[in-house]
Length: 263
Image (cartoon, rainbow, N blue to C red; front, side, top):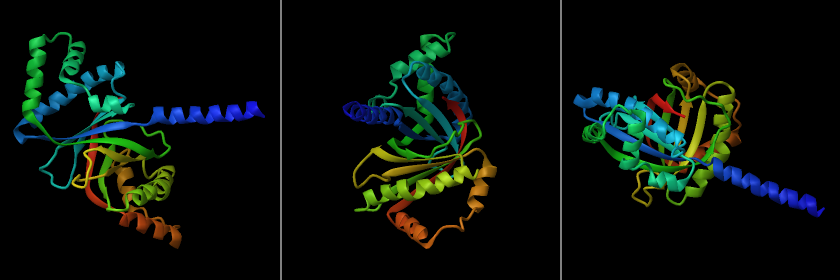
């Protein structure tokens, strides 16, 4: 009996370790580029894909995605979203400093001299502005095998929990909305869904407290999902959905197309 109890305890502890290891931490960088420098920046982000691949090989990051915005709160605010995924909160907060980025650039482009690498980064910094950066922790996601490939579509929904309803909102996303999205995935109407909590910035003045990612393999799947209406919902389920919607304020929705992927 003691051996069985010990095995159960070890199993639970191991499951906890696995869950901790699987937790994802993401940095969302909303990028603004002046119109006369868009072409130069497109070349630069292709270069950055190779640099971040070196960081992935070195296990400094878990993934890197570069998204081109289709719309947003104000189309003039941002043109791109860069998402860097980590498996550790400390790695997320430390990020990749300039020294590491230049070192990875030298590995990715051995034909460039140190002076050329420095000039490249100075040029990139001068052509972009990052007015918003969010540090986030994934709380829950759907079970799926979504493939992150160029051309995939995503809706980045920035949310702010209503004051006093923070826990109610998170409970609604986990217990009410996740099963709805899981059902859509099983019906072929969606590719992936995840729910994230903001780590930084925090406080009452923060523009958002959470973010949901709704991903689709292409525009066809996206438009089919928009046209779908679940007529099988019970009155109790509809009530739970409405209560969940009332526990948060949907601040902005950004629709974006995946252009570069490192995984």
